Length: 183
Ligand code: ZN
Image (cartoon, rainbow, N blue to C red; front, side, top):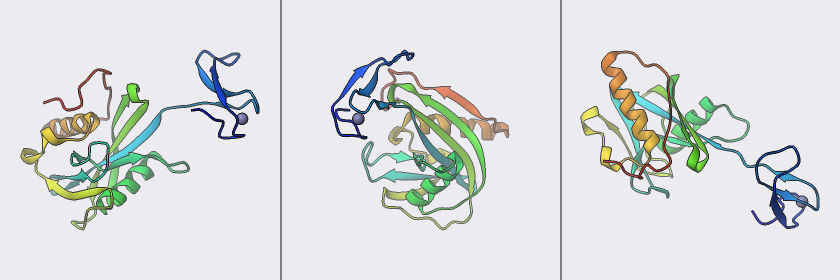
């Protein structure tokens, strides 16, 4: 950050009084520009035992497969964000959403939250951010072509839980140094 989004003057970095972290501070209008983690909300859409995945049409990870997910907007709940992203990326609607995974990704200041859900119908299609959208049996999941660790982790939990017949909520924190495509 170089300039104050409030008054347009140059900002500096310093620790404000009573704070313990370096912040962007505008000494002209005295605004402190706090920066906090972003929430990414997504779903695990299921239809007749198969899971819906989207192949990304945008960077990062263009061409890789992901669960429908994206950044939460102001004014909506996490569940609404997951539902909206599923409509936008897969033109699909969800029933019976259940909170499923919460994964911290501190090195990029994000929290990823996924809901298990049923597709309301077989009616889905690639949204503008997807190249294609497809239902996958467990045996056909493209593990080596998944876009994000949090998607992989969520799918691993999902198939393990399905064998046991119980789906507890899982939380995890992804390590900083994990390579982008573990195989
Ligand atoms: Zn300012």
